[in-house]
Length: 214
Ligand code: ADP
Ligand code: ADP
Ligand code: ZN
Image (cartoon, rainbow, N blue to C red; front, side, top):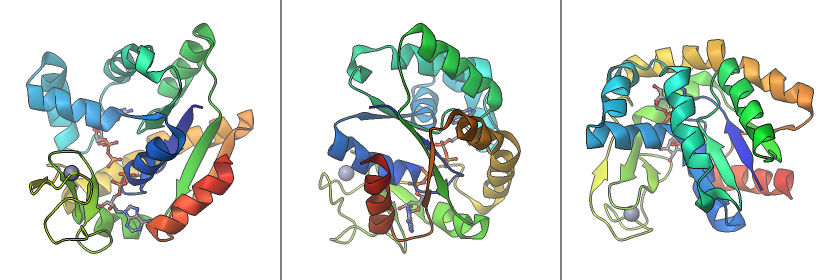
């Protein structure tokens, strides 16, 4: 099964993708995570993306497409994947379609996570992740069960993203409305679009996803 999760920064894509991975045995492919590891490794690709990411802009379609397609063709993803953070522009959605046809891959569901912009500011500024396993947390909405210890791996180091601050959130949200939102109707026209109410609590959103996917 192949899924696309659509929604602005903070909508809960990464959080739900982790649950979907465990539940359906498919792997998350996050272009944001891939870019951050390129930046961390100091690769040429990372160098090209770093500044744009820090300012809350979008990395060029060409760079993203090369990066994601080479990964999607890897055998690890044959049983399916959850695309998180991709596609983000109409050219990316069109290029994805072309690649899917050429490789005989089908997208089963495109799921839009509907949320209010105002709530996203608090979600983004309170977000942090376990440095060891990447599990996501929130200062108010998802604290580890034991303070400062990761539920998933027992890790005790956590990181915050350089771009998760009030200054960049606004431009990331406006990029979403301008560049990404148009692809919602693109998938609506294809009849594979579903939506969930992302303003509900994390567990409730998970339940809705389960209902939508079946
Ligand atoms: P995205 O991948 O869409 O940018 P995340 O899954 O990283 O979003 O979620 C952003 C932040 O909000 C994280 O700190 C996460 O723990 C928290 N969060 C995710 N879903 C919810 C929810 N339904 N209600 C409250 N907080 C949430
Ligand atoms: P969020 O869901 O919080 O917006 P991501 O982790 O998906 O964050 O992306 C972080 C940053 O990486 C984006 O702000 C953008 O600069 C870049 N990025 C990620 N995916 C794409 C994409 N498909 N196209 C262009 N830029 C991207
Ligand atoms: Zn962990």
